[in-house]
Image (cartoon, rainbow, N blue to C red):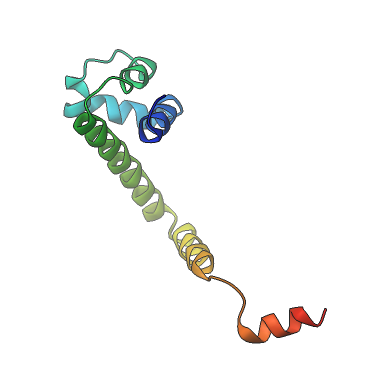
Length: 105
């Protein structure tokens, strides 16, 4: 059975948008892996050494993070919305006052 880390990386590689895949293909580290397309690279994830899988995962993350940062530079309002959503997700639950109100319903 394949490790979850490898499984999820494989899925991510297969589903990368074309623009992201092009950037990944141009990366020096990925070029050294000699994969002709995303599906071949995804298949090779199953047998690559652990350190290589980790570096590939990090490379994909860096490219996607750069793309997201570029998008937020173009549309700063989306960045603000994402931050507010993230802050609301960090809220663990209801306040004591809200809990009391819900208990009476």
